[in-house]
Structure formats: structure tokens, C-alpha cells
Length: 265
Figure 1: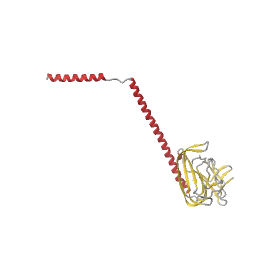
Figure 2: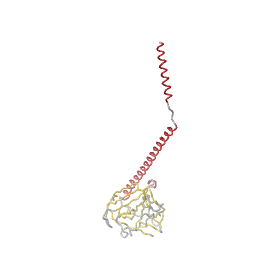
Figure 3: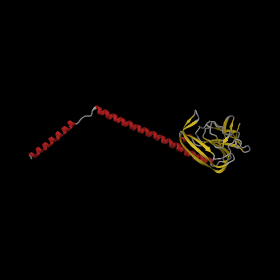
Figure 4: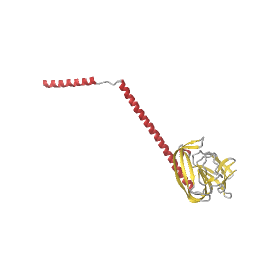
């Protein structure tokens, strides 16, 4: 019994001695080690912040591209709807960056342009472009019934005109101001989500005045910037080209002499 107690006392003594040695051998952290550790942590944090910033920029860029693609797809679908019932004739106007477009009565083109004019089944002349338009007076006969607000470049716009069936002409400007039977924004401004649309139409190959065609090509490009100083669109976000088919073949009338022309009073 005494021997057992002695053995247990010896074990406790050895354990205490071992614990003292551990405490004795333990070393504290120096100031240099602390500073090095903090420096490494700051580097890791900077790398993480940089990675998050890059990821955020990539996400925003992808989101803007998706928005632009959505604008493009919807615009193309709407163009197919607008033009499919075109009748009478079709006329393209040369590309221009002017805000106040002088389309009516001007010389058309037998190749391509960024505004398209045709007759509607109801007998109106319809002009479709995305080049902007200044404030326009709305006329019904000889009466001014209202005013349509100016539309910025890069927004799809349709304008309608009453055609005189005897002369084959319509009034585009009066007293130096644009006039129309009706003006309609195809989409609200918010639809574009800060983007700008450009549409270029082109005839099939080897087309001349009097040719009958069943379709026309439309190239839609979406930009993220518009330079007002140079009146030019910049930074392409999305683009696509599709064939717009007419329900019935219609005649090409590109030149002012053969096309329905406007009266500038």
C-alpha cells in the first residue's frame, strides 16, 4: 500500500515536471513576427478586394450586354411586325446623322439606307427610322390637333402621313416645321436601358426602280453611347441581321421622280 502511494506520488511529480518544462520552453510572439503576419493578411485582403472588384466589373459588363441583346431581339421582332403588311411601294433613304430628317421628297436609294418608307393597308405613308425627330405638329386635314414631343436619336420611331390619292404626294413639313398625321414611339424611353439603336435596311441584290421584292434585310446595332457633338453612336454592344419578309411582293421606288414625294409648304 505504501509502495503504491509512492509510485503515484512519483508519477504526479513527473507530470508536474513535464508541465513546467512545457511552460518554460514556450516562446512568445515577437513584434517583427506580428508585423509580418499583419502584412501578409493585408496582402491577402487586397488580393481578395481586387478579385471582388474584377468580378463586379465583369458582372456589370455581362449584365449590360444582356440588356443590349434584349433590346436588339425585341427591336428586330417589332420591325418584322411593322413591315410585314407593307404595300404599295417601298423606299429607302440614305444614311444621315441629322436630327431634323428631311426624308419626304428627297432622293431615295436602290441599295441601303437607315430609314424605310412604305404604304400601310389603310392607305397612309409610314416612315420608320431611329434617327431622332424634332417636335412635330400633328395635322388632320388642315387642322393642327396637337404636337408630338421631340424624339432622341437611337429610339425607334414611326411617322404616318396622309397621301393625296390624286397627286401621290404627302406633306412632310409646313412653315419650316415637321408635320405628320401621327407620330408614335415604338417603345418607351426606359425600354432602351441607356442604349441606342441603329437600323440599316438594304434591298436584295440587283434591284432597281420598279422591281418587285418579297423581303428586305435589316441590320440592327445597339450602342451604349451617343456623342451629341459629332451626332454619332459609339461602343457597339450587340448586332444582328435578319430578313424582313413582306406578306405580298411590293415595288421598289428609290428615286424622287418615281417615288411618292412630299410637299414642303
